[in-house]
Image (tube, rainbow, N blue to C red; front, side, top):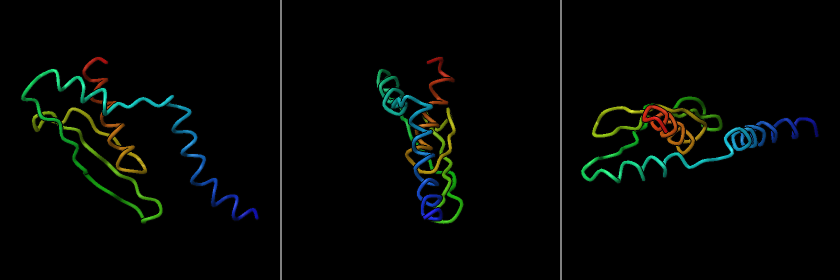
Amino acid sequence: MDAAKRHILRFVVPEIEQHKNHSFKDYKTKLQEIIQKNPGEKLEYRLISATGPDHDKHFKVEVCLNSNVIGKGGGRSKKEAEQQAAREALELMGY
């Protein structure tokens, strides 16, 4: 039973911590809304790396504005890494 508990908590606790610490905000949507105010601007997320075994991957992503890196992020999923990159970009932009 203890082994099963440890196995399950390995996945559940990080998810709870992620949501608790962020009082989740959709940084990608916020960044997209800001960029869309300027026609002709292109926002792109690039996967830089995916390391670790399949059950414990870590992803690194860059967010680029017109080919210029404006934020980097990492996480246990591509989505989480993109959110962190967008958060960093928003901080850089003063939001």
